[in-house]
Image (cartoon, rainbow, N blue to C red; front, side, top):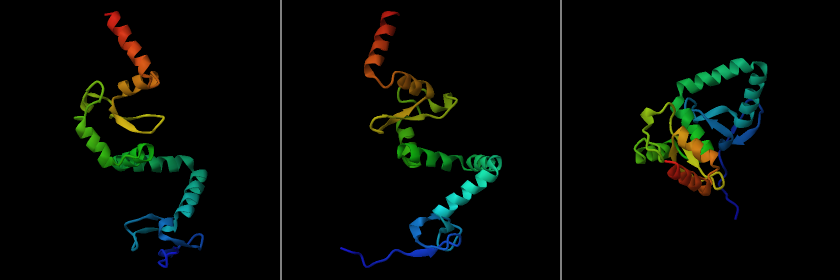
Amino acid sequence: MLSLVSEATKNCPKCKQEKIFSAFGKDKSKKLGLSSYCLSCTVENRKANYAKSPAKEKEKLKEYYRANKERARGYSIKALYGLSLAQYKEMLAQQNNSCKICKTHEKNLKRRLFVDHCHETGKVRGLLCQYCNTMLGNAKDNVLVLHSAISYLSSSS
């Protein structure tokens, strides 16, 4: 069944096309809460600026990340693992801000806890310190290898 309700549209001043609101990025400073240019034109413009002056664009990006560390971290966690920053913080609280394996508190680590996930299913398993995350990666998440390592350590003590 066709919907008689049409989606709201807006004109992009660069490509001169009328596009639906979802084709524009968010911008709270604008009247409609949408950026002036459509996402396609914005990406095109960023690519052109980067091609002209990569060093300047990289520095602008670094500055943005320095000024918005928490927000940037949230984008990264969402893009990589499908977790919101709130979900990450909830997991962190449930784990008492500690590695799920070795229980080392985050304040005693040089880096934040990593989001550990199954590479086959993408399912998030928990938050780990760099060392425990690397250990699982080196064992290729193979339980038999880890059991063998436990046996080895137990017999050589």
